[in-house]
Amino acid sequence: MTHANDPAPPAFDWDAIDSVFLDMDGTLLDLYFDNHFWLEHVPKRYAEKLGVSVAEARDELLPKYRRIQGTLDWYCVDHWSRELGLDIALLKSEVEHLIAVHPYVIEFLDALAARDKRRVLVTNAHQKSIELKLQRTRLGGHLERVICAHDLRLAKESPGFWERVAAVEPFDPARTLFVDDNLDVLRAARDYGFRWLLAVTAPDSRQPVRQVAEFPAVARFSALLPQLR
Image (cartoon, rainbow, N blue to C red; front, top):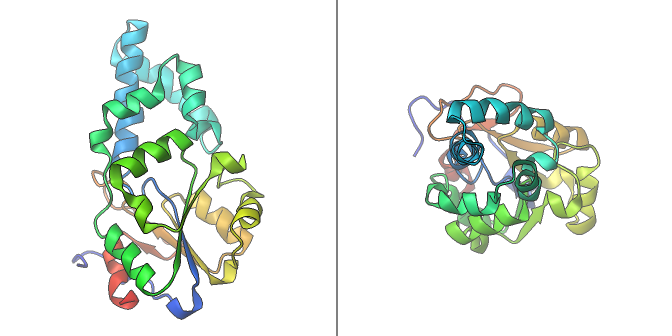
């Protein structure tokens, strides 16, 4: 289950953890879908709309993406539909066959359930994206709760986000593990006082595994299964 080049997995004291908060895109789901969607599919459709080449469309789009990265609008389907004059939810459904759960995710979630850990999805994804992805993957049946940053009106990167989570999902940061592939999000969680943090180093299955020294890290959840069981 572990791979030859994988570093030794971080050892967690599972008896000291009550809840596991999990990101969606790049953590539970392969980020390849989102990368393909925003870097290939949207430029293609935008190019058709404007009557320009895909390269020209991409050159126009990338600065728009960068300008609001890390804000709630960056993750907002409705924002991009207005901004680009495209039906983003519809475009996502055109390539929804690319939505995929990372290997070992279901086994990991089931192992958490067997140890009586509360499993909570905490995502910046827009409600329409969550609906599409949970419908496609059936992941909802392996989670106790789904928390959407758009409902809380703050992105996970933002100061004050975790206070808003605690208001709807009371938790002890000293007894909660938070797993994400976004280092800015993990830093914000660390600032809030999470004791247990985990970075995912292979968010996109078609990209090389990243080196992360700042947080305990795994490429795949298979690395954690032996200690959980």
